[in-house]
Length: 323
Picture 1 (spheres, one colour):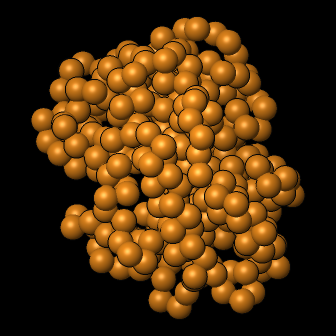
Picture 2: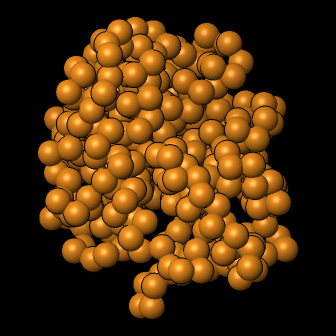
């Protein structure tokens, strides 16, 4: 296990070093020809891996360029709540409250009557991805009442699932699960097929674990178990795909809370996948994603968060001397 954990650490550091190679002299993270919201994961990724100074330079660049608008939205984020939640966590954990507080105000303003959050402002449905990730952000903010309402939405989504081989991940704003009965184009994870959007089930499992930690209410841990059991029914690449990182950190957190060895095994399966597929320069490319710099950087940012999270859990529990 010692060598395994050291490999995880090296992969994280290489992924962050790769990202840092594109930070501009003024601290910014936008390149000509690329989307202008490409920096939303970097503050969290960098600080978790020992580069808080660079993360703060990036946040100072946001200030200098007045990218945070009066309504708490970031310019060019196009109302994407998922991206705003990433940015919030990075800024908030660095204590940059002049940035994180307005963003949280914006996020909470978008909460639907059912407690969930849409992916984009104006969407007619809420989505598991944006609901659970925002819920975790709300926990960091310390608003337990709002977090409980969001958690109830995630729980309702799980309890309304009509099939064991599909995980539907959208709901109407009043809380009804969207299946083909409501929309012929209803979105779901197909457990019979590979390369699915596994994060839609991984995020709420992680959220349930965090809710248990925040409240001590064991029912949240029970729901984390149910999400994990549902996740295990997905295709065999469910922990060895580029979209598996959220589930891996959820599994590691569940292992920390329960001692479930299966969860530990699955968390390590994803980290092994990252180590195996990382390119020499620290980046990542997969055949089902465009071979473009934006995607290489995004994978590096994302994986450095999930693998670092798993690594932190395992290092805290493994009785070994680490290099």
